[in-house]
Length: 491
Image 1 (cartoon, rainbow, N blue to C red):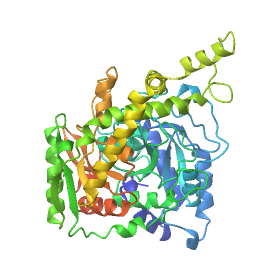
Image 2: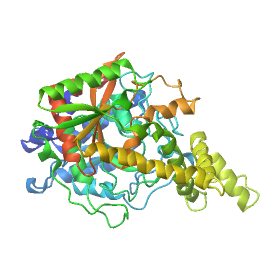
Image 3: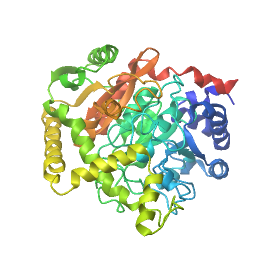
Image 4: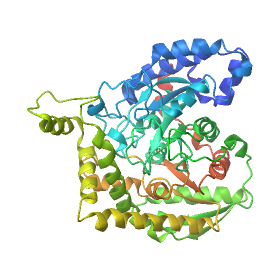
């Protein structure tokens, strides 16, 4: 078994398995060997599922070839806010310490039905609140490109595990950029599907009108294959859309002749680094050479997205997190004098600072006398932001810009400045408010750290997003470049 095994796509690995040159048990063992070699430095995993995964791999090896789908036997890591039966799920919070789910999230059931092997649970910002992975109660995940820098958040564990080659696939969740921002920081591919494309049943809620589960991979093709597996209507989720799931892989035709690209001038405003702007302009030149055409557009309400998002997301969080009280599951204080004291101390001890900050902000915005001034107004602005997208999509097929204003930053650099930290999501947040799909693909480097290109599509038009991303990926070699840490497992 060589370190280059995870250099291959799912299709290449499956050809090896079909030819008898590789077993699923060997592939699974390789994943755990790499995790054990690399994760002491990266800290992407919270819980490993090694014994069950090995048993599952042996069982899959015995299945006949005709029962095997496109991701059969592939190892995958799952973000720790997606419930997994029999595997501790904490959302990286102390308040859910020891919580053992008794059922699988719909996406996890779909992974199992597809024959994928779950390797373990991935670290994240507590309850998905954060942009750096420094808000986890348990550990801080590091960026494989530079272990002194953050991997992004909240799906930092998912992006870092894929970037380090610990697993070829991971699931994350995206509320305001939590898949795309870490994908950009770690130089991998991260997709936030259209709201409603993927079931949220079994996802521990942060902001229910914004949260969406999505895939993190090294290539666009693998990303499309994984989204295919997890998509579809779910009767257990009232926000799940009953729309047909197309063959996303079939959309990777390599042809974008006549594709119309809108480039918002607001996405190149102050705060976006010159290298990030340059990388996007070069990406547009590449796409232009392949037959696309682009034009500058304006999305005037983008400047209000950050304030709108933090009011709405925090308001929904203050409601969703009320269920964590220490009575039924998870952490509970041992110092309480009465029931009210029990609630207060359990939540004070169980929630981290960022979670408390957002609960307080959300509760304030929803309170009597402030609801109209803050929450209701934010909902109205959300509608204006959605209308900006609708207007651009009347003339253009996709919208393109940087995923993040800058590359990754040092661990500890911004943790004490929440407002500066929040600005990291300024380019990704409008997508969640509008509910449209968007992908981040590697497009360059600044100071040796990856930069991401964000491609945004119409609702339920992930096919065009993937087609555009795939053409760019195939015309460049950014997706082939790997952090030096990648080779450490060979030694």
